[in-house]
Image (cartoon, rainbow, N blue to C red; front, top):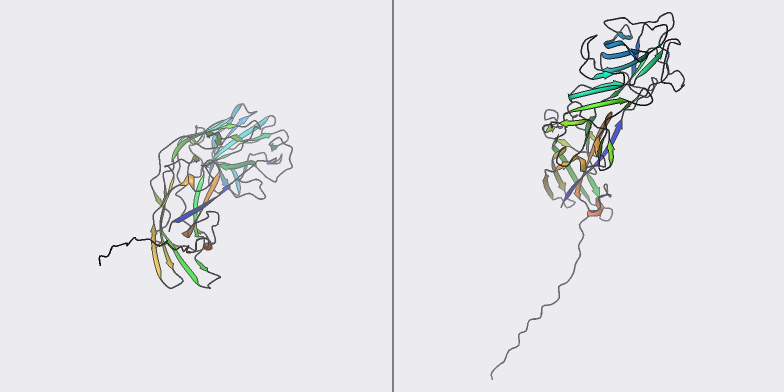
Length: 372
C-alpha cells in the first residue's frame, strides 16, 4: 500500500507602486517622508520596520542626502541628524532602503546606493526584512512628488517611500485530504489518524548578491535575472552556503507531533527570510516523519510509518523563490494508496476489490499396465 504525499503551492507576492503626491505646503517646506509598502496609501500595509536610510540628489546630479537616517518623530517621518528643506528651484530625487545601516554622511554597506542602482553584496539572509523603495522625484517649484504619469494625488503628505521586499519569505501548512470515509454501498466507515512528528526543511542557499538597476520609467527597479532552461527567474546571484535541517514542528507545542485534520494547520515559520533562488535537485528539501493509523471497517487496526525526503522543486510547479514573494506551501497527505493522483479527496478509488479466476485443471497422466 503506497502512500503518496500530495503537495500544492500558493504564491503571494507583495506588489507596490508609487504615485503622485503633495508632500508639504509652501509655508512648511521642511522635507518629510511617508512610507507604505503596498499599491496605494489607502489599501497599503503600514511600514513597521523601524528607521530607514535615504539618499537624495538635487536635479538628479548633485548629492543632497547621503545615507541620512529617517525615523518617526511626533507622527512625522523625517531625517534624524540634519534638517532639510525644499529648494526654490530644480528637483530632488530620493532612494530609500530599510532598515537603516551606518551613520549620516557615510556610505552605507547594506546596500550600496547610487542614483541609478541599489546593490546588496554578500548578504546573509536572516531575520532582517531587507527592503528598497521606488525612486521618487520632487519638482520643488510645484512642491510635489510625481512619477510622471499624471495620475491623481493619492493622499501622501510626505515623500512617498514605497518599500518592496528584497528577499523572499517561506512558510508551510499541512493537512490530511480525508480522515474518514463511509462506503455508501455497505454503510461501513473507515477512519485514518495521520500524525506528523517531524517536518524538516533544509539545503536552501543563505548568502548572495543582488544588483538592482533603475528601470526606464525612472522610478522602479529591474531585478537580477537568472535564466534556467530558457525561463527567467528574478533571483539573487552568486548564491552560496546552505542551511542545515530546520524543524518546523515545535516539540514544546507539539510533544507528540501534529495530528492532521482536513483544515490546513500552520507549521512553524522558516527561520527568518530566505534568499530568492532557483530550486534545484538534491538541494532544497522537505523531510517528513509520518505515522498513519487506520481503523478498518471491521474494527481491526493497522499502523504504518513513512520517512520521505522530497526535493521541494518536485512538489509543485513553482521552480524558484523570487524577490518580494511570500511563498506558502500547503502539504496535503492522502492516507491511502493512490490510483489517480488527480483524485485527491475520494478514497473510493482505492477500495480493495477482487478479481477472481479459476485455474485450469492440471491433467496428470496416470496410465498403468496391470498384469493378470
